[in-house]
Image (cartoon, rainbow over all chains, first blue to last red; front, side, top):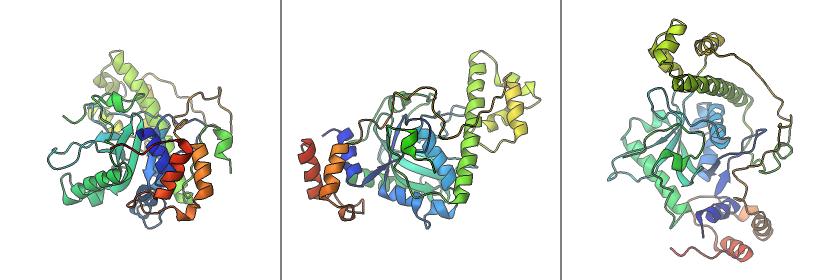
Length: 179
Length: 162
């Protein structure tokens, strides 16, 4: 079974939910949310809703799905979609984040690429709770992303490319991947 | 309320629980900030590609490059003054268009990223056999065998060979 078909099976089973924003335009990229991630968005008790940032978060999700620019800042740093590059011995590879930066980085969606332009968002995290890079909370969040992937996609490895343009095929600034 | 299917005949809108009015307000504001950011950043890239430096762009409006860099970290709550100043620095011209969600597109979309990712026949078959209430709610549990069997039988898909 291809990962493409497996995604469809998971969607039928209610394990993944595609994100389709209200728009006049058709989606240009794909985003599937796990049940945990959907709960993060919907539950009144979730941190996203307690911080009252669901509106900002959904704007970022819409940017992704509608094919909006994946940008780097004037110094070339990725500010919207970013590969997380920990030491390979400590954490699993191919974990990325979507960053919701308005008015500052408050929340992140941990994700993996299933295919080019297709991301599986496993869980939202708040910057405050994650703490500094390398904190126990960071490592736990990495493990949780990997565990969610393994439960949903047993036997499938996340998509891996050589340049960012292998992952995001259109409207994406150039930036280096993890070395 | 406008039906999404009326807007986009290709991909049905898998609606989440609706946002609260306050969230909708922030969502709308975030979309506007994002649109302004993208529009100005696109012109900045073009000017850079044409050879204009960030120093020249900043100096055109009496600003410095540190301030300019800060404006392009990400969409932010630019005042109209900042927005207009940046456009002027880039020798641009502002045109603002706000469309009604139900307004037709100039041409019918010929691409939908989700097209081919759904399995309408399988969805129909599986929902007949397996009521939604029986779908395992927790993502930590494996898919029910009976559901997988329904899907495989309907689609002719075989189990992964891993």
